[in-house]
Image 1 (cartoon, rainbow, N blue to C red):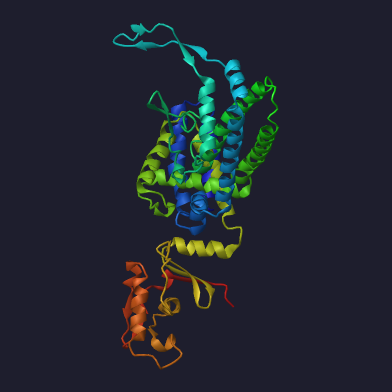
Image 2: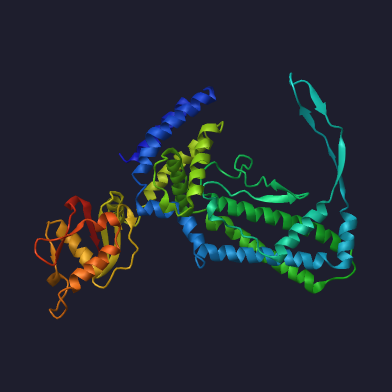
Length: 448
């Protein structure tokens, strides 16, 4: 039985043992044992496979490419937000409109009361008197809309992968943390998952709430004015409709559908594996080492500190997504399995080109002329423990005697040192042998 299926089946047993009457600490202990004993080994089977890595980093890679469909959509959404904000400001700044706005929405008096307990026993407190503060709600909202109109504010940050990068606003010159991106405070943010997407949606929806609130105030003020502002109102209506159209596509584009569920499931499992396997190589995520190190800590903390099994339920729901990694066919699965074993893997795309992996990592170096053919032949002959000679590569005898050794040396410089060291001179001059066991070489070919 595949590891993920066993882990999925075992979680049914965990849930049976953790009914409502079970003490929460006991529930969490049982669930953590399941995570360590079953989930981590199951994910380990996929950790080094390109298909899993591709899905787990799909959002990172999408937003690092300027012309990707995802980035193009977000650029369009940023433009729609800015255009709508500008249309609101263009109307609100008209003297008649602004006069009615400030008259309808004056400063609010808000009662503030606090009590601070100090010393021992805790019952001894110091109470501050009730204080009323004038809160300029309209001005705050107006300035926020103006800021959005002046320049687009980035909606995506790939460093959100393990948790959203926190944002701060200045209040009376002091930085105040925004609550919307704090995972423990925002119920819309799950304990684990594709935080890049969730933070994107949170940022967009927060901006839309501000814009819609200001629009409501603006429409009320407009009803008091005698001037129609026909063109400005038409621009407002058109930009509002365009933004609504973009918003209707946001969640389907990033959260709904089988592809998004697979991507999110792999992100969940990658975060959990990284958190509970500190020695795991996470370089393939492409994130800064500090972000990865901090991410391991915060994700593990959520599983150890949260007073519910929600995090474990998310992991359990993610496990079956692994079965969809290889729906393109068994060849893809076999190639991934070979890559995960860490040997030399060559996937031929044509007779003279293809992709190469070593120790689970793709070699992206540009090979010299005849370099790929030489490496392919070295790999094929390594399985028979035979050397490669110049006559195996070149069709003519007109070249210099040193051309083959020079080309092999250039090839070796393109390879990781651990693979480079395995290419040795053969017993016959100007021949070379790849010192790899048959089991460490895998060649996949769809070339007829």
